[in-house]
Length: 174
Image (cartoon, rainbow, N blue to C red; front, side, top):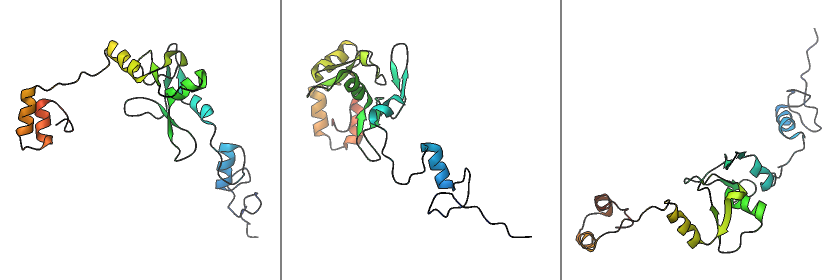
């Protein structure tokens, strides 16, 4: 009985063991995901194209289902690995309305940080955004210390981590 020869990858210059469709595991996987066996790093898809992969269009809000900040705002990388992140709602605004003028923020009329629906987004000043938040009751009230409390805090030698909870404020406030 003659020894059986092991099949090899059909890509020129590749000596990998046959996996499927005539390719080694590396070339088969590349072909399966990209449709090509070409070597080298692939450029990421344009950010506008990648944006739509994470949008779920609802009847009202368009929800961002990708990466989010701790406070719920969507974000997407501007390019490949290691590139800066863009706020998804700001990108949506720019894709549909054009460039955001310098010094302005993008506001949500729906008060949903996940929403990227361009009809819910408008540009405004930071002051307008803050006033809008206050009008809608979304701004956290500030805890104001009395003069007597401030005197007590200044006279204590206890660490801020002990004093802050007593007055309901952060360590940095102390």
